Image 1 (cartoon, helix red, strand yellow):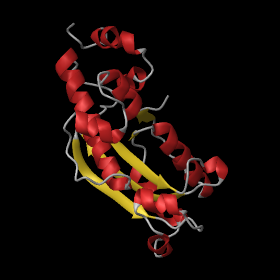
Image 2 (image 1 turned 180 degrees about the vertical axis):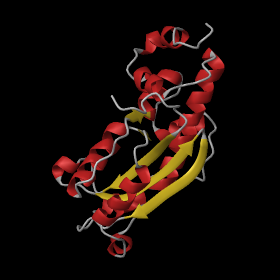
Image 3 (image 1 turned 120 degrees about the vertical axis):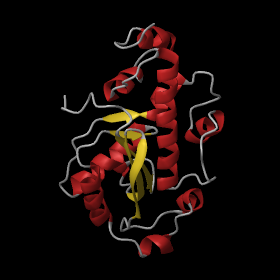
Length: 213
């Protein structure tokens, strides 16, 4: 267990990747990374860069993301971008929507450059499934609409998605605070919440140390 696992959940780096496909195990690479750094619930820094994976992306990915092969041809290589991102991330805890996807690519790209990260991961999608059980589904775009979160209408670009995920993450912390009176929400609570059966969420949060329920 790392030393900072119990720091406040509103001090994290929220990240998102755009990629050539679904899995680095099948040879897919990252083509864009976006991230926002939150400290005590405020955005204090941002990181965004396209990256050249050394391979062409197919037409579906171009249409889905709006990232073209011409754009990637002018971008710095993945190795350069990921080295800069590793410095940006430091030992901060990390949040992503469908974190298992982003973590696989982060692990694969960091492995290529012999870099590592010390932070723990939490998944905003899994947490949202517990906090917003009445949402039609738990895709990022649906949750943005369901919770009336700020957005500029851009989806499937890394920084825009990271910004929306950050709003979602902070909204969940606020709703947990308002609903259960937990003033200090540690990162470990959000990780544990993601594994709680939906029917047990109320009891779990009500029994958390600091809750007056």
